[in-house]
Image (cartoon, rainbow, N blue to C red):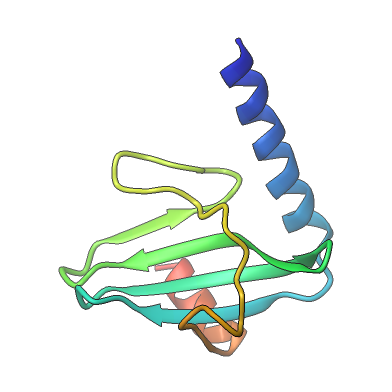
Length: 103
């Protein structure tokens, strides 16, 4: 039962961020396997929290994660904040993120 409560809390947190965000930031990251990761993040308590994440694998498979779909057999929505000084991400236009997200 504790796991269900934790999952419900996690969903509620990401949903609230998604529904209340006024400013969103978008990033892309290429991984060592040739995949492309796209992130939509918002500020919360001084950190950039990922609220949507799309992975386009090198084989063309698309995996999407958000409060509506936190995880599956392939992966999960990251629970790590984006650190612009440490993480190898580049800022992208919102339109680029949306194009991948809505494929």
